[in-house]
Image 1 (cartoon, rainbow, N blue to C red):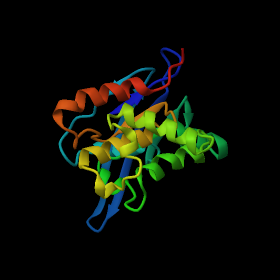
Image 2: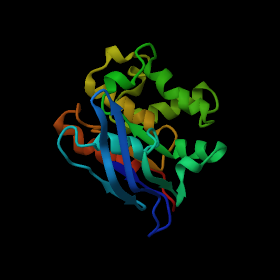
Image 3: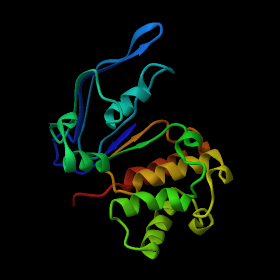
Image 4: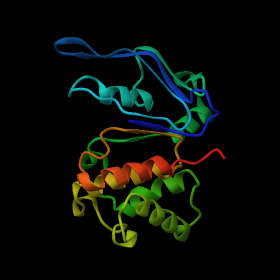
Length: 210
């Protein structure tokens, strides 16, 4: 699922243009994605549905710019992402964030929740000092339903349940105020009773252009 916000009405913020991706394996070349075209405008949310192994995760990684296509183009604000350099590429990396499917693998086991969430805040100049960072992290944890937030900041991943880890992963994606969120089964480990609430919070969290 990709959640998109902040662009002029009718324009495509991010787009896959006839994108393909193949992998070389001992059994030969495998086409994981073949000629996929998707386009997202302001405020849109799209869900990709399909059986296991059909290429959903690969499509998401292509959309987030983590995989380079072997054919076609990834466009952001009408420009080819893989032709970007320097500050333009850095701006794309901040604007598009991925929530990984497996929070057991995507969170560093030797870093606390504070370490995980504060790193992007400090790296991208979003926080000025520990007090400011803590206030922002508390708000992020409240958004994803981890309350009281001060109980979670000092914890390590092994001290959290699968659903709590997944919420930390979502909070991490929100630290840099992304314009696009690519979520790979982001609520698969969360209790059914709170999935709708969590998705609603994520859909409402993106910055507004108004």
